[in-house]
Length: 246
Image (cartoon, rainbow, N blue to C red; front, side, top):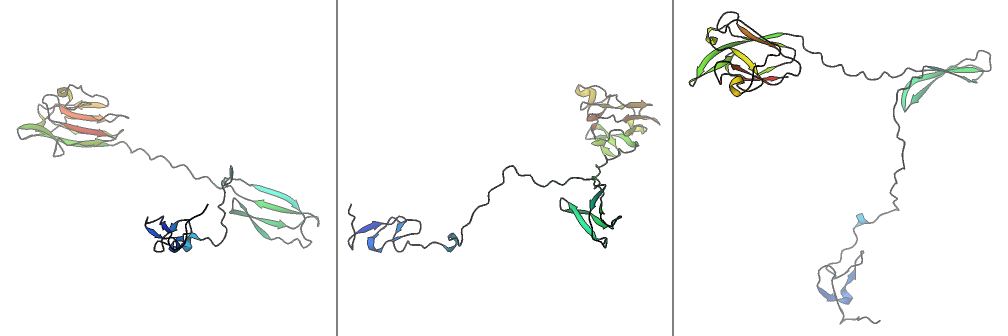
Protein backbone atom coordinates (compact mmCIF):
# COMPACT_ATOMS: atom_id res chain seq x y z
CA UNK A 1 0.00 0.00 0.00
CA UNK A 2 1.30 3.48 -0.86
CA UNK A 3 1.18 6.31 1.68
CA UNK A 4 1.32 10.00 0.99
CA UNK A 5 4.58 11.73 1.78
CA UNK A 6 6.63 14.75 0.84
CA UNK A 7 6.20 18.45 1.40
CA UNK A 8 2.51 18.42 0.46
CA UNK A 9 1.53 15.68 2.95
CA UNK A 10 -0.18 16.68 6.21
CA UNK A 11 -0.93 14.93 9.47
CA UNK A 12 -3.15 15.50 12.51
CA UNK A 13 -1.46 15.83 15.93
CA UNK A 14 -2.55 13.10 18.36
CA UNK A 15 -2.43 15.61 21.25
CA UNK A 16 -3.71 18.95 19.99
CA UNK A 17 -5.69 17.82 16.94
CA UNK A 18 -4.03 20.50 14.82
CA UNK A 19 -2.81 19.87 11.31
CA UNK A 20 0.92 19.96 10.59
CA UNK A 21 3.15 19.18 7.63
CA UNK A 22 3.92 15.49 7.90
CA UNK A 23 7.62 16.06 7.44
CA UNK A 24 7.65 18.31 10.52
CA UNK A 25 5.82 15.90 12.82
CA UNK A 26 7.58 13.63 15.33
CA UNK A 27 6.92 10.33 17.07
CA UNK A 28 6.93 10.46 20.89
CA UNK A 29 8.45 7.79 23.13
CA UNK A 30 4.99 6.34 23.72
CA UNK A 31 4.03 6.13 20.04
CA UNK A 32 2.08 9.36 19.48
CA UNK A 33 2.45 11.39 16.28
CA UNK A 34 2.61 15.05 17.28
CA UNK A 35 3.47 18.46 15.94
CA UNK A 36 6.91 19.89 16.72
CA UNK A 37 5.49 22.19 19.42
CA UNK A 38 3.77 19.24 21.13
CA UNK A 39 6.82 17.00 21.24
CA UNK A 40 7.99 16.08 24.73
CA UNK A 41 10.94 13.75 25.28
CA UNK A 42 10.70 10.94 27.80
CA UNK A 43 11.27 12.19 31.35
CA UNK A 44 14.43 10.79 33.00
CA UNK A 45 12.38 9.52 35.96
CA UNK A 46 10.61 7.14 33.58
CA UNK A 47 13.89 5.61 32.47
CA UNK A 48 15.18 2.75 34.60
CA UNK A 49 18.94 2.33 34.79
CA UNK A 50 18.80 -1.39 35.51
CA UNK A 51 16.39 -4.27 35.42
CA UNK A 52 14.11 -4.20 38.43
CA UNK A 53 12.36 -7.31 39.71
CA UNK A 54 9.53 -6.91 42.19
CA UNK A 55 9.94 -9.28 45.14
CA UNK A 56 7.29 -11.94 45.51
CA UNK A 57 5.63 -12.81 48.79
CA UNK A 58 6.39 -16.17 50.36
CA UNK A 59 3.60 -18.72 50.38
CA UNK A 60 2.38 -19.61 53.88
CA UNK A 61 5.29 -17.95 55.72
CA UNK A 62 6.23 -18.86 59.28
CA UNK A 63 7.13 -15.61 61.09
CA UNK A 64 9.24 -15.74 64.21
CA UNK A 65 7.09 -15.86 67.31
CA UNK A 66 8.67 -15.12 70.63
CA UNK A 67 7.77 -17.61 73.30
CA UNK A 68 8.67 -18.35 76.87
CA UNK A 69 11.21 -21.16 77.11
CA UNK A 70 12.48 -22.59 80.36
CA UNK A 71 15.91 -23.97 79.54
CA UNK A 72 16.59 -25.00 83.10
CA UNK A 73 20.02 -26.63 83.02
CA UNK A 74 21.26 -28.60 80.02
CA UNK A 75 24.48 -30.60 80.11
CA UNK A 76 26.01 -31.62 76.80
CA UNK A 77 29.09 -33.87 76.48
CA UNK A 78 31.62 -32.23 74.22
CA UNK A 79 35.37 -32.54 73.74
CA UNK A 80 37.48 -29.56 74.78
CA UNK A 81 41.12 -28.75 74.42
CA UNK A 82 43.73 -30.20 76.73
CA UNK A 83 44.08 -26.92 78.56
CA UNK A 84 40.48 -27.13 79.64
CA UNK A 85 39.91 -23.42 79.10
CA UNK A 86 36.58 -22.17 80.39
CA UNK A 87 35.23 -19.41 78.11
CA UNK A 88 31.80 -17.75 78.18
CA UNK A 89 29.73 -18.09 75.01
CA UNK A 90 26.50 -16.12 74.73
CA UNK A 91 23.43 -17.93 73.45
CA UNK A 92 20.05 -16.60 72.40
CA UNK A 93 16.45 -17.63 71.74
CA UNK A 94 14.54 -15.74 69.04
CA UNK A 95 17.43 -13.27 68.87
CA UNK A 96 17.07 -12.37 72.56
CA UNK A 97 20.22 -13.03 74.56
CA UNK A 98 19.10 -14.82 77.68
CA UNK A 99 22.16 -16.42 79.19
CA UNK A 100 25.66 -17.80 78.77
CA UNK A 101 27.25 -21.21 78.32
CA UNK A 102 30.70 -22.11 79.58
CA UNK A 103 33.23 -24.72 78.62
CA UNK A 104 33.99 -26.71 81.76
CA UNK A 105 37.37 -28.49 82.13
CA UNK A 106 37.06 -32.26 81.48
CA UNK A 107 37.11 -34.56 84.44
CA UNK A 108 38.95 -37.37 82.67
CA UNK A 109 41.12 -35.41 80.25
CA UNK A 110 39.20 -36.33 77.12
CA UNK A 111 35.57 -35.33 77.49
CA UNK A 112 34.29 -32.04 78.79
CA UNK A 113 30.90 -30.67 79.50
CA UNK A 114 28.99 -27.61 78.33
CA UNK A 115 26.61 -26.32 80.96
CA UNK A 116 23.79 -24.09 79.74
CA UNK A 117 21.85 -22.30 82.42
CA UNK A 118 18.83 -20.22 81.67
CA UNK A 119 15.82 -18.82 83.42
CA UNK A 120 12.38 -18.64 81.88
CA UNK A 121 11.10 -15.17 81.31
CA UNK A 122 8.37 -14.37 83.75
CA UNK A 123 5.06 -13.67 82.02
CA UNK A 124 3.65 -10.23 82.50
CA UNK A 125 1.21 -10.36 85.40
CA UNK A 126 -2.40 -9.79 84.62
CA UNK A 127 -3.53 -6.40 85.85
CA UNK A 128 -5.22 -6.66 89.20
CA UNK A 129 -8.83 -5.54 89.23
CA UNK A 130 -9.37 -2.17 90.83
CA UNK A 131 -10.41 -2.70 94.43
CA UNK A 132 -13.95 -1.81 95.28
CA UNK A 133 -14.22 1.28 97.43
CA UNK A 134 -14.70 0.62 101.14
CA UNK A 135 -18.31 1.00 102.23
CA UNK A 136 -19.07 4.49 103.48
CA UNK A 137 -22.07 6.67 104.24
CA UNK A 138 -22.66 10.03 102.57
CA UNK A 139 -25.17 12.35 104.20
CA UNK A 140 -27.18 14.88 102.22
CA UNK A 141 -28.89 17.73 104.09
CA UNK A 142 -32.43 18.13 102.75
CA UNK A 143 -34.44 21.32 103.02
CA UNK A 144 -37.61 22.55 101.32
CA UNK A 145 -38.06 26.02 99.82
CA UNK A 146 -40.38 27.79 97.43
CA UNK A 147 -39.14 28.77 93.97
CA UNK A 148 -41.39 30.71 91.57
CA UNK A 149 -44.47 29.56 93.41
CA UNK A 150 -43.57 25.86 93.78
CA UNK A 151 -41.87 23.92 96.55
CA UNK A 152 -38.69 21.97 95.82
CA UNK A 153 -36.32 19.72 97.69
CA UNK A 154 -32.93 21.40 98.11
CA UNK A 155 -30.03 18.94 98.47
CA UNK A 156 -27.10 20.53 100.31
CA UNK A 157 -28.51 23.89 99.18
CA UNK A 158 -29.03 23.00 95.49
CA UNK A 159 -32.58 22.99 94.15
CA UNK A 160 -33.69 19.55 92.84
CA UNK A 161 -30.01 18.65 92.48
CA UNK A 162 -29.01 15.78 90.15
CA UNK A 163 -27.05 13.25 92.25
CA UNK A 164 -24.68 10.37 91.46
CA UNK A 165 -24.40 7.39 93.78
CA UNK A 166 -22.12 4.34 93.72
CA UNK A 167 -23.13 0.70 94.10
CA UNK A 168 -22.27 -0.70 97.51
CA UNK A 169 -22.24 2.74 99.19
CA UNK A 170 -24.80 4.17 101.59
CA UNK A 171 -26.49 7.56 101.19
CA UNK A 172 -28.60 9.26 103.87
CA UNK A 173 -31.11 12.02 103.10
CA UNK A 174 -31.32 13.93 106.39
CA UNK A 175 -34.80 15.48 106.76
CA UNK A 176 -34.30 16.89 110.26
CA UNK A 177 -34.77 20.48 109.09
CA UNK A 178 -38.22 21.86 110.00
CA UNK A 179 -38.89 22.86 106.38
CA UNK A 180 -39.28 19.13 105.58
CA UNK A 181 -42.49 18.92 107.62
CA UNK A 182 -45.19 17.32 105.46
CA UNK A 183 -42.70 16.37 102.71
CA UNK A 184 -41.57 12.75 103.07
CA UNK A 185 -38.73 12.04 100.63
CA UNK A 186 -38.92 8.68 98.92
CA UNK A 187 -37.26 6.97 95.91
CA UNK A 188 -38.67 5.58 92.65
CA UNK A 189 -37.49 4.27 89.28
CA UNK A 190 -40.02 6.66 87.67
CA UNK A 191 -39.55 10.41 87.39
CA UNK A 192 -41.80 12.16 89.98
CA UNK A 193 -42.48 8.77 91.59
CA UNK A 194 -46.12 7.93 92.29
CA UNK A 195 -47.17 11.26 90.78
CA UNK A 196 -45.67 10.09 87.47
CA UNK A 197 -47.38 6.69 87.50
CA UNK A 198 -44.49 4.89 89.22
CA UNK A 199 -44.11 3.16 92.55
CA UNK A 200 -41.82 3.51 95.54
CA UNK A 201 -38.38 1.89 95.24
CA UNK A 202 -37.52 0.04 98.45
CA UNK A 203 -34.44 -2.12 97.69
CA UNK A 204 -31.85 -1.28 100.36
CA UNK A 205 -33.97 1.67 101.54
CA UNK A 206 -34.72 2.44 105.20
CA UNK A 207 -36.61 5.37 106.71
CA UNK A 208 -36.71 6.77 110.22
CA UNK A 209 -38.68 9.44 112.06
CA UNK A 210 -41.05 12.13 110.83
CA UNK A 211 -39.76 14.63 108.25
CA UNK A 212 -39.14 17.99 109.92
CA UNK A 213 -38.20 16.47 113.27
CA UNK A 214 -34.75 15.64 114.66
CA UNK A 215 -33.26 12.35 113.41
CA UNK A 216 -35.64 11.93 110.46
CA UNK A 217 -34.06 10.51 107.33
CA UNK A 218 -34.42 8.28 104.27
CA UNK A 219 -31.38 6.11 103.61
CA UNK A 220 -30.37 3.80 100.76
CA UNK A 221 -27.58 1.24 100.48
CA UNK A 222 -27.18 1.14 96.70
CA UNK A 223 -27.55 -2.42 95.43
CA UNK A 224 -25.40 -3.92 92.68
CA UNK A 225 -27.01 -3.17 89.34
CA UNK A 226 -29.33 -0.58 90.82
CA UNK A 227 -31.23 1.42 88.16
CA UNK A 228 -31.38 5.17 87.73
CA UNK A 229 -33.54 6.51 90.55
CA UNK A 230 -35.59 9.61 91.30
CA UNK A 231 -36.31 11.20 94.66
CA UNK A 232 -39.75 12.71 95.16
CA UNK A 233 -42.22 13.90 97.80
CA UNK A 234 -45.00 11.45 98.53
CA UNK A 235 -47.44 14.32 99.16
CA UNK A 236 -46.59 16.85 96.46
CA UNK A 237 -45.71 16.59 92.76
CA UNK A 238 -42.64 18.07 91.10
CA UNK A 239 -40.37 18.56 94.10
CA UNK A 240 -37.57 16.07 93.36
CA UNK A 241 -34.76 15.20 90.97
CA UNK A 242 -32.71 12.40 89.44
CA UNK A 243 -30.14 10.04 90.98
CA UNK A 244 -27.63 8.37 88.65
CA UNK A 245 -26.07 5.08 89.77
CA UNK A 246 -22.54 3.93 88.95
